[in-house]
Image (cartoon, rainbow, N blue to C red):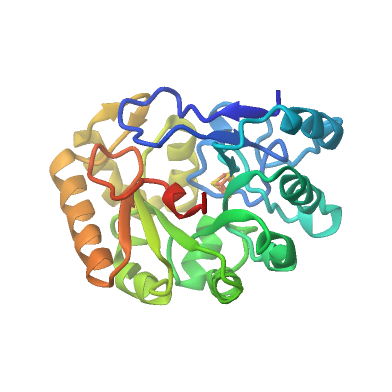
Length: 280
Ligand code: SF4
């Protein structure tokens, strides 16, 4: 089955409402330094097409319970760079339209702008992840993703087309993306919902972070040493993490935007993932 229940490793800190997920591609070539899919997908930064995806999906969608949402995608981006010429995600959206599927889309690309004609006819919400609006820092963190400015421009167009829009500021990295939080928030002030999440380290993520950001990791290393270990991830120390989340929540809600947090054991309202934005 390509459409599967979303199950974030049964993390006790996950507060997602029940939903399904579909990974249109295997792997993702945005190659984000902090990406967690490298812990369970071999050659995760090399994108592969899925065999027979469209006909199999068509069969699955005939039986799909349309009360539920399908999230695109949680173990890949629905718009890796190859989607620009392959157009498989566009074909999936056409199938969603034909079968009346409700959909929650999340990306670090601006390619979805191409598909706004279909997306505006779907019951969907579109989200972008923006870790920082600083283009230089974002390029180091997410080498092959669209620039933050392009992602935000495309999301504004989605909003102008009448589609509910949200954002993730994820991960928040102390001494790095956290320093730009106010500017990032200002640039995203037109969205309805923002989900935040602090950086969580697994050994593969830590290895890439140390190789790319040795000085930053000199500062972060001792913090994570003191932090909690939850579901195979190293978290920041709880007091620091809660202080960051509280400040983020205050700044987001002050702007009239609803707040969610992801795998933090912290408050979210009305949902952690923005799925409340998807029209019924
Ligand atoms: S966009 Fe998401 S799935 Fe793709 S490399 Fe970045 S974190 Fe991983």
